[in-house]
Length: 287
Image (cartoon, rainbow, N blue to C red; front, top):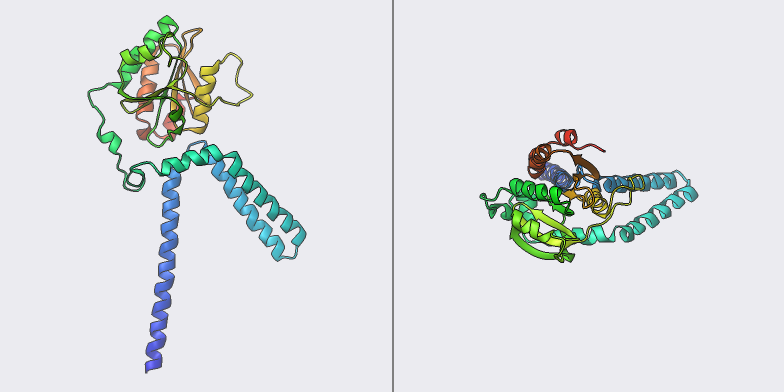
């Protein structure tokens, strides 16, 4: 009788153990999917993740070759994959440093897993960011004043703005016009805006390395495209030579002939979390 009870107890223990392992696996999968959808999906980092998955499956393939006695070929693939993996650490060192800094910022856990955003709670509802930006761009186009404005998304890493001059000021057309005035020391760099705050100005952005980009684009346009290739932000660009206004997003650039369409797209961008990927591609195309 005791042996039967012991056997049943062992069976129950094994079932609970298997259930526990299953729950742990599901929890890991859930965390990975949450992180992927929040910070990787529909961004330039998605290509990098696909590359890592390719290396992972290639490593499994090398182990299969070794298991079937193709030891020389399997070992060759194994060492090649290890070498590529180590080189990725060097190649993507700035991105890794930015990512680790993002993990250490205050409120990361609450924003990622609980959906809280303390910064948005302090947002001043009296500031019409779209109106202030449109008024500024209207003046820039008339006077042919060059400008580069980054509209930072909530999930966009902000380490690139560390080299600029921190402001943390309310968005206003007067302040934007003052900063980009040709005689001010900050007019050559980019301005970073998040919600209703100007976080920094005089920021240096990475230039695009796309060889297919037309020669007619200057440094501002190349910086705007370069940032949006690696970041989920959007960039407003006003040409100093022609006064033309454009917006860069996802590594693409759109030029505007009127401020009405510019304002409509700007409203969509500032509410980017409410716009689907399909809707976004409707008003963002290559030019």
